[in-house]
Image (cartoon, rainbow, N blue to C red; front, side, top):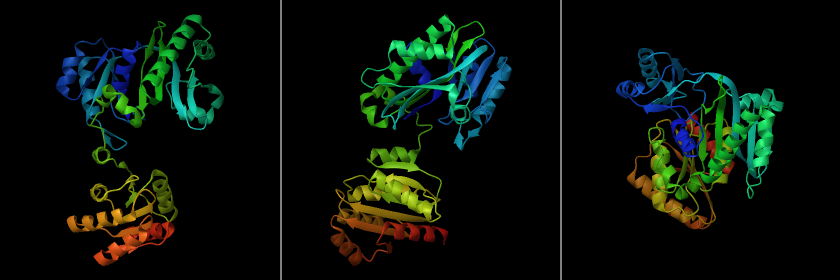
Length: 379
C-alpha cells in the first residue's frame, strides 16, 4: 500500500518530523477556503501515487490567492501517467538553501533494511545512482538492533559537516527509522529533506510504502487507503483473496502461484505478446474463485485471449475444471481461452472438461499454451 504524500506527511507529523503548513483540496471551493490560513507564496502539488509530478507540470508555485486558485484548478484537471488528479496538497513554500535525500528501503539482496542518503536530494535518486553512485552513502541495518544513534550521526556528518545541521539530520534519520519499523514499511523516504536559507529543517516531500501483508496490524493505516487512486479491479480481487495487478497488455492470465504467474508472463513476452494482468488464484482454488478471476479479467476491454495455466499441487485441477464449467455457463466469454491443467487430479479434470464440451483450446505444456494465447490475441 502506497501512502500518498499528504498521508505520509500525516504519519511524519505524528513522529515529530517537521512538515510545511498546508491542506488538501479536491475542489475550487476547498482551495479558496483553505488559502486564507496560509502565508504566501504557496506550493500546489498534485496528489497521485506516481512519481514525476514536477516534470509533468503537477507542482506549481503561486504568489497570491488568485494565482493559487488558477494553478490548483489547472492541476485538478490534469492526468499524470494516466492517473486523473483528484486532490492537490497546498503548502507554504520554503526558501530552500540545501536539499538532501534520506531513505530507508528493504533490500532483498542484503536481506535487511538499507539506509540510503545523499547530499544531492531533490532529483531522481535512481538517476544519481546511475550517473554518480559515489554520491550515495548506504548502510545495511541489523533488523534486530535497528539503526543506532552513532550510525545516524556518521551518515549525517557525511552529508553535512556543520554540527547543527548534522544533529538535525541524525535525529531525522532515527525518526525515519522508527516510522519504517513501526509501519512495517518496505520504503520510507524524504526527497528532499531541506534546510532553508535560515537553516530551518523541513520535509518537503514524503513517501511510505507499507507491506500489504502487515496491514492487519495497522488499522489506522488501512483506514487511510485512498480509494480515489485504488484500482477497483485490484480492490475487488483482494476481497476474494485473489492477487491481481492490472497491466497494459491484451492477454489475460489466470494462474495459481505467484512464481508460476511470473513465469507465465515471461513466456507470453517471449512469444511476442503482452500480459494484461498478473492474477494468482492461490493454492486452494474453489470454483467460486475461478469465476471471480474470469469476471475480473473479462472486465478489461483490452483482453483478446485468456491463458489459464494451472499446476495442481495443493490446487486441484478438477476444482478448476468445475469452476470453468460454471464460468462458461454463467458468463459470456467473448474471447478464446487456452487451458493448461496439470498435476493433482488432472485426469479427472480432463474427463470433466471433455464431457462438458467447453470451447477451450487445450495446451500440453506452458510454452505451448503461451504461444497459442499470443497467436489468438493477434488474430
